[in-house]
Amino acid sequence: MYSEPIDVNKEYALLMDEQDPLAHFRSEFYFIEEGIYLDGNSLGLLSKRAEQSLLKMLESWKALGIDGWTKGENPWFYLSEMLGERMAPLAGAAKEEVIVTGSTTSNLHQLLATFYRPDHGRTKILADELTFPTDIYAIKSQLRYKGYSPDEHLIQVKSTDGMTLNEEEIIAAMKEDVALIILPSVLYRSGQILDMKRLTKEAHERGILIGFDLCHSIGSVPHELSEWGTDFAFWCNYKHLNGGPGSSAALYVNKRHFGTSPGLAGWFGSKKEKQFDMDHELDHAEHAGAFQMGTPHIFSAAPLIGSLDIFAEAGIHAIRQKSLRLTRYMMELISAELTDSGLIIRNPKDDLKRGGHLFLEHPEAARICKALKDRHVIPDFRSPNGIRLAPVALYNSFLDVWNTVQILKDIMKNEEYKKYPNERDVVA
Ligand SMILES: *Cc1c(COP(=O)(O)O)cnc(C)c1O
Image 1: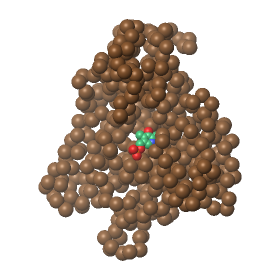
Image 2: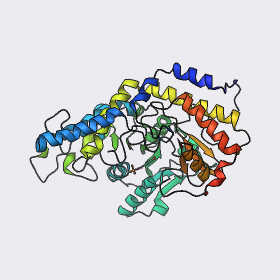
Image 3: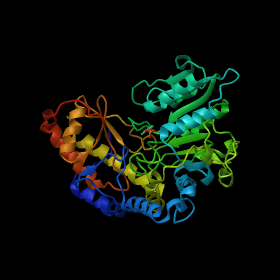
Image 4: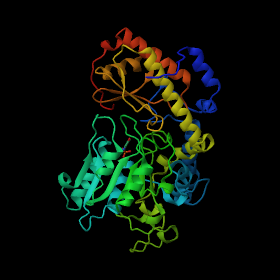
């Protein structure tokens, strides 16, 4: 599979770590039992800076009470906008195009309620059959809400290999009855990156609006949403962005849609200076902030203050470069060292198509994950037969990757996994 010679020795990993310009960020994170954490694409680890910003926020409540809304280091009233501005470079957006608010799912509902406007024979929503289930649930419920049957009006592009999508087939499905397209940036199982720039252009040429779910790319892969002209996007901040469990999510709306009334309105979508007039006529903000609903979840957003500092310092392009090198190194080691294990690499191998994680397939995947956990390697099991491994640029090392492959080799060679039942846990 790989033509270049592979150095499988530990010394190579150590050398790569020595030369790694991001290596110093590792000491800013808390690790679990000195283990190897490879699940940063499900829940990122806590950094000391994120911890500090949350503690400071608690202090502001303690010290200021109600005045915390407008006083202190990070006044709560402006926090969602401030974080949106600081997150915008990761999305390739202008500062007023991003707001930190809600959850991924609630933001998708908001964007569907706003931008799904069935009209003049354009009634269908185009999605795909591999996307994260919550997106499909939201789309189906919004279709029903507007009186359209999902059976007829939701088109899900098929995958021929059960793992990846073909952009040609997505484009071929952009028919004249499609009103809106919702697709993932990076597929949560295979880690395939879709060509968002191309898909945006093709959708617009056909008069269709398009939005992306960035949950698996934000903080791992750079985006240029403004430049591409993508209509909207939404994402969670607890995966690669390390915002903590249930962290406030975010959304992006392209400038050209500023002024569009929010489909699901609430008083936090007001122009700031008007909000406390308490008028019953909403005068919504003329930026992404218009799509907020109620009072922001301050403590669920606070860790992002510290976390985004780290991203600003490290730079998303350096993060992407290291991430690609880590995943490539892991694939090379697996190909060289686990030849008869039955493990199959199912993520795209091409750098342009590969997100931040590997996806390995094996019929015994559930129990292999259990065996890895007992050896202090934290993977991510995806039913029915997938193992996701995410070496994260900010806190994983080349040595982590090397050690993981050695442990995996033991587990497979000695059939250690046979000690465990081959079934998934409640949260997998
Ligand atoms: C994690 C994830 C979600 C989760 O949505 P929540 O509303 O945060 O629970 C949605 N979509 C994708 C693609 C995800 O990876």
